[in-house]
Image (cartoon, rainbow, N blue to C red; front, top):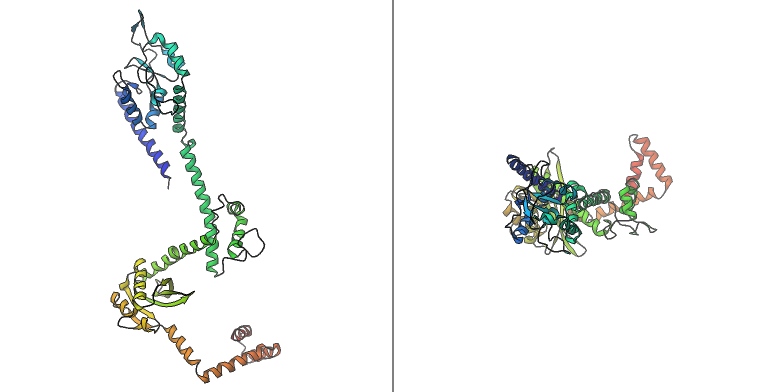
Length: 453
């Protein structure tokens, strides 16, 4: 996508071409090939009117006047003016001698085109009026003195400089300041995006591998463990010159994209706007789903964990974690409202919920005023199911309180230690297993036995 400033320049150029073509057609129909300054100024035009007309001109219009103003034909006969006791006329050679000079056949007068178009645009000179600037110059007998004095004035020098700058900016738009700034800005954006892409890749790698980002020393040039994140960036910089230069000497030292705050922001963006968005899209594509939720206390703060279970496009059952949401209270109304609000914020139809699974706590499972009942008000088909994971946990917890179960677990623990504490006994056990169960994998047995201990 083009920058806004470039779009405006292109639009202005197209408009200028359209206006130029229209003018040329009109002038060609009248027998002329170029513009005449009389379109702006006449013998009765006031300085205020002329100033308004000039200010209304765009850069493209001024460029047209500077380059396409009518020039007298070599065979053109200039009107005679009786001045000082004799007839005097304009001379063809004057236009060649003074590039700033333009002649208006309609007004039979001469103008300094840069002075007329850029009059008053310089803060140092202010506005100037008179012949050659706001009025046609017609006293041909004073031509030499008038032209020489005009070229010595400061307003002429400033106007000529502004005219040259305008012509150069139109003929070479890539060299003007807006284009240079736009090009430099585009380069900065491309470089920053490439660096941020490498930083995001490092964060994503650590997240996928479930490894910590930070280390003992949060600096690249200090001894110690810089952490997986910075170490991975150093590895990526080996084959990435831009990233290597950024790590060595960033353009802005307060914008390195490597701070813990930036890491957390990237994780949040990836989680909410990429991972969660993809899961939600799959959930909506499946249409029907079940919500699983449980509240947990962490660092003296209540959180609600929300998961979803659904059948994907391949007819496989998926169970995905959706979010951790902070809770101010753990009442049934608060938890139910939080679940419904989360689904609505992610454009998931609440009415398509066909199941809800929680633990057996009263604030979750009550079918009158708690979470189950409030969810069914928004999703009547959402049948409550006591979470199987919680049921299993209750069974194991209850079983471990029975003496017989505790004794069995103790005997199994002593048996494992009996073999693990002696390499000889472990070797004999592996030999017996190999002879009696040839298809068994002893290494797998050793690992599982070690983990059991």
